[in-house]
Length: 346
Image 1 (cartoon, one colour):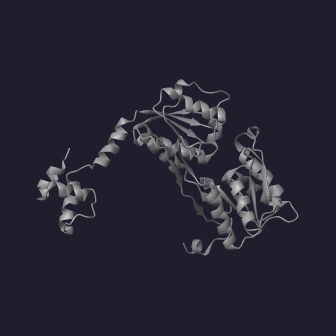
Image 2 (cartoon, one colour):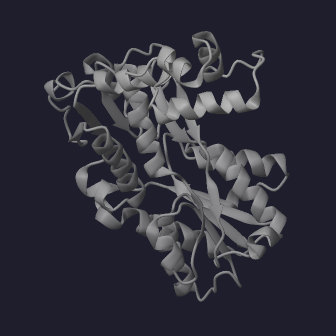
Image 3 (cartoon, rainbow, N blue to C red):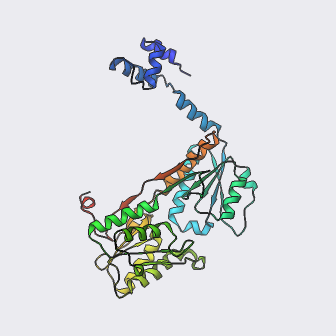
């Protein structure tokens, strides 16, 4: 391991000067040429700062096995590209760190506790019931939530800010010129309990534009199999647009619902976006291949998975204070809506 003393000898300065330069001490009086020489010499000699050495120690302290607990069943995840991407983000980061990820999917009963107890830590994907949450707490050495904020601040978590993403999308659609904007989504806890739905209602009320007839939610049952979201989107969009005074644009809770909504518009003889504009969330791969391509808000699923692994690594290495990470979202403007002028120029 290269030492500060060796760098100091190579450059011809004191060890104290090298230390202060490498720690970015702004109060140090030294020429820019000398400062640059110290930094370049340190890089050439592969010097690792104490912070970088600590980071390397964190990674080496991590055991090679974590458990990945999913709120979906295997067949449900398989048809949801968003959660496939999230899992792939976790697995990719684990592979880079030479860690094994053991998958535990949702079933009618709790999995064997030994699956969690034998792992160095657990990443829980999505929302879990109160009973599942308690079970995870009891049997996990370290616990991180991905795509979900737990009810207390005891554990790490990482997700996108869905309420903010909805406000951004509504604001952008309004700037384009849409005024009568609807929403279709699923019931989560209560009729209007899902985050995007609540944010839609709050924003529309704040701008004196809320019409309860334009906010339609419904149950999404497992009975519909692998097309449950598409079928719900088809049913709800058809109900929304069959009204006597339908919206000029509407937002679907996710892209899978938008696929069903497209089919409903075709059956009603409505053109997208000439008769009605559609925007959505997730930006799954199929969104850009719909006809017309779907304007949608990209939620960084793979990055959420990667960040969850990094949080777990820090916890295993000894960090005690819980962290909550929120990753930014981005609207991908395509042909299912009019485009903002800035997007047209891009």
